[in-house]
Image 1 (cartoon, one colour):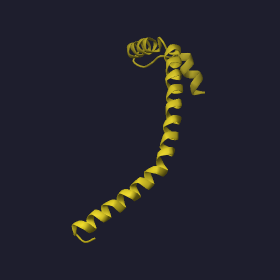
Image 2 (cartoon, one colour):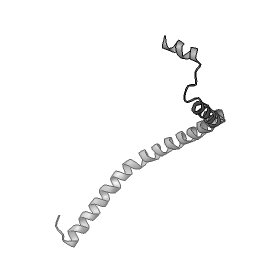
Image 3 (cartoon, rainbow, N blue to C red):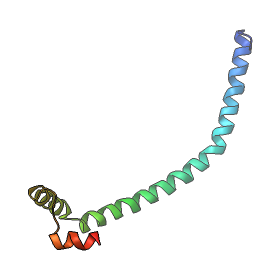
Image 4 (cartoon, rainbow, N blue to C red):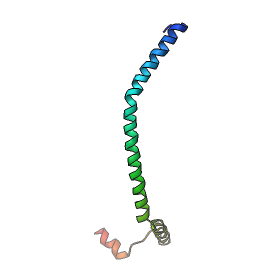
Length: 87
């Protein structure tokens, strides 16, 4: 490309037309994608709420189990349970 103002302006317009053509083709696809994402997001949020409701109390259970495990030095099974697993 020559750095002559008129040629640069012409090229600038050509590039603008190419850009507009590409965006004209991609815009409908972007809109379709965005609709799909929005619907999926609604479903995700709904499922997140269900999961939170079901798992309510799980943190407390895990915390208590961890404290018990530490107190037992990780030996949380009865001796006969450990022997049964070895078989």
